[in-house]
Length: 327
Ligand code: SF4
Image 1: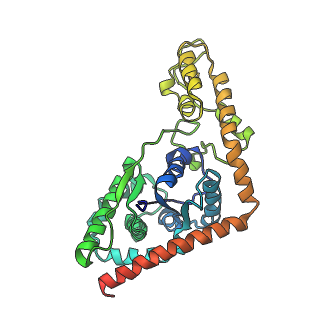
Image 2 (image 1 turned 90 degrees about the vertical axis):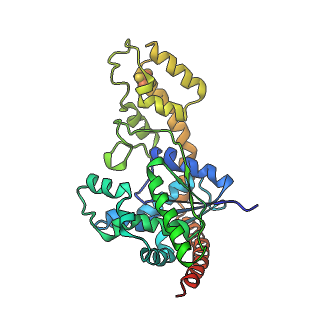
Image 3 (image 1 turned 135 degrees about the vertical axis):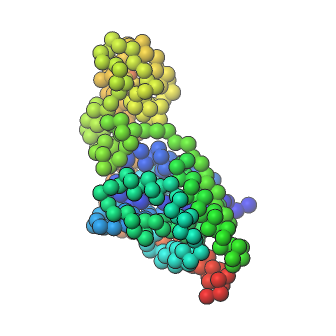
């Protein structure tokens, strides 16, 4: 039986951090074993908010791809490509825009939320309103069965499902209706306790050298109620402990949990131990990363091969779409 197809993308925002790793890439790496995976750099999506500052997008794609490759996203197992090199996405987006009622887009929760949050940009643009429809085109052009998402992204997949159904209703059954693949991911906050993000300057990057990892880990916020080492701590509200749960072995997690509560383990010592765990975890990834960094041609070849494979699938779908729409 052929594998079900999964599609997922990531906006190119430069080098990736541990939040990206636990939030998406660890999951992608596992899905490669079970599904026919298509993963893409969503550079047109980056334009929906970053249209005024496009300088870094191209370099960011390369950085991001090298990070993907270094954490085990494999061009032998998955199709890795760049959205803007597959022009068929734009054609399908345009055709879908003809049948998509504007209120469907206006009611996607992130439309209003991001307009309120990103007040330093004018997001009253046509492209920003339509980006969930571009996402729909990204998904259904590959006839993806599943789209891995967190709970907040479910309304986007819901829109894709409605649009696919509407197209099939008007023109015949061209598209499978995609399902969300809900993924539970551990929550790792930035070193200051806010969401991990490059723009907050609180992220530990996959490419951070050991000294940087140690410096950042030592600056991590801990249980705010633990002032002195003699105060018993509460690991449940400590971000350092969240990192232990992801990166330390089970015995260490049990020990830290116990000794923190008994006040026999100090935060300075615990953070030092965590830093060494992170350094060891990142070392082999960084070795692979270095190899790709030294060989930009290989990265370009991988991308070109992935783009060709994606393009041939997208082109076949578009032939069906044009035939169904009689254009
Ligand atoms: S000992 Fe570790 S888990 Fe406990 S509060 Fe300090 S840093 Fe957090």
